[in-house]
Length: 287
Image (cartoon, rainbow, N blue to C red; front, side, top):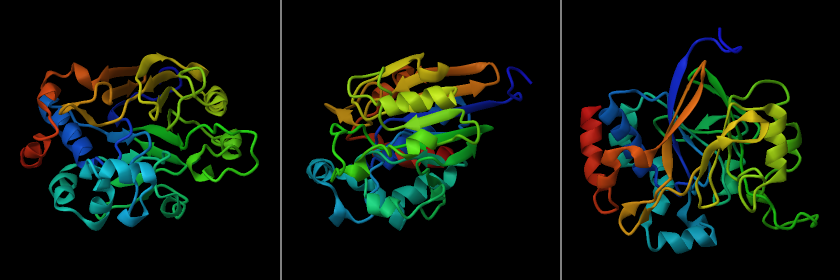
């Protein structure tokens, strides 16, 4: 045992806001395994998963973007058992651990009180706020939502999108969280970050703190509570090329945590909006 942790090694692919682009996320994760000859222990995602099981219940922003990019509707397809899901998920021995952002169907997500796989293959695991999930010898925790711009209001009609102010004060008081997933950033990290998330990280002292939401990249850099903090951009295409800083590889062992941005892998430059689905059969077959 070193530093209080039993010897172990775990590797995760981590993605920023995907907004329904589940197929793109899975293709990238499997391609990384094939290119490196290594195996992931899991995939982590930091909110705005695009959890709209009923496409008639999209929020205004998702509806607007979906008119330009139908991949925004990917969640409902996976929930129903899509052909792409059937091609990709049976080849993945690892779970995809995801959480709420501020663009989801919150009535749907409120059904889940404990970590729950929502797809037919039992691999897309939703982690509710304040719940703990063991994976790869580590414990993961989540706190979704964004920081309110109207903290003085007693009632905010957008409350389901917000950080749960009551829960964040008491969450994870009863045990260790090694990796904290939050949708928004802690206050010190970016403009518009959350003081409540800073306090949470300082109280529970995660080894790693991952977030998305803000359309920027951060770190890896020291974060609140002594964490290694990383902020990810959205998983999307810009001029037919993948957005920089939208994913990376997290490696953890008893000696510490290491981060590699996805942009550092040479093969990722060949991924395009119009061509990434050509990789589906190849990564499935190679698996």
